[in-house]
Length: 376
Ligand code: SAH
Image (cartoon, rainbow, N blue to C red; front, side):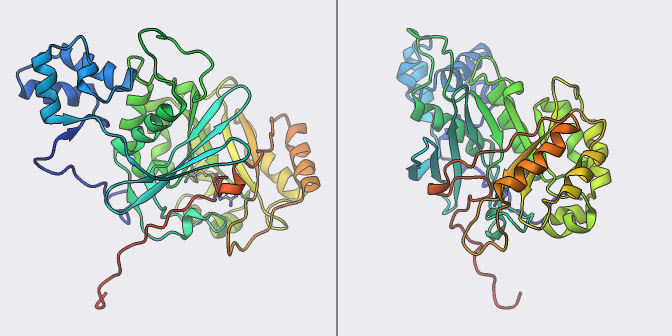
């Protein structure tokens, strides 16, 4: 049975249209080139130009013969997702609304900090989870993003930041896009195959080359896929915990009814590669008078005991019609203090890009599910 049956697949490529190379891995490229009678090493060259250099014009691929470049240009394109709108926050955060070409839109956010720059990447249009405090959950249409649409977010951010290596500048230190968090719209583990394919392309040393240590995948708790995420991708894991009792978590993070806290924490304890230097991040949104008492903090450290972890406290970010308030700064500090005293680092996440609705839980696009026919 599919893990999540309520989601539309990513659209298939148009038959007959030129194939977009973005989203293809090395094997896919080799298979396409083999159809043209070209040897495998050409795929290595193509992979490096497309993902390592960000080149979109075949004429720039100078180690490929002129006749082959012409043939490639006839059969393929190298195209990013379109941009419907982009917005800059006064704090330097930058948000893109991507136009996926089928009427759907999705958001992607760049968050610059002093020692890094993080890109928050979406995995689905909308989300099926309906977490009560999350704006994305109020959006009805849900479809999975394909590998091109996921890798494309990172590539267009790199275009914008001007960070593609060139012959003159082959190595770039202190990148403005150094880290990736799969924390945008959607539940990445409900679109595991496409997310995995995209991240493998992104981590490849010959291409975009962002290390798995700099990639964090956040899940609300799709327990059966957590192990595979560690084994196949080896990226950092973040868990949207937000409550310490099933009764409350069932209500605010409804996927808990399927995969309760004990099962979720069990999967965390067994996460491949878990150790003190590679901790799990527990995300905990601070909702006034809902989950923010001292007793909640004490319960939290009790249930995660023994897991190498840090607890990221996220002040609730409001959105129009949201049924919650943000906890006060004093409350958040008191909560953090209890968690820290138990030995867990507990940073409070500074809201970023609030003026452009780019902060955690504020992302939403206008894509809506087409109206159902009357008989349904
Ligand atoms: N579906 C995945 C990926 C989304 S990550 C997951 O749930 O982990 C987005 C993070 O922002 C999650 O931890 C989510 O719970 C949190 N979040 C959602 N709405 C929020 C809001 N209004 N204020 C603060 N954090 C929010």
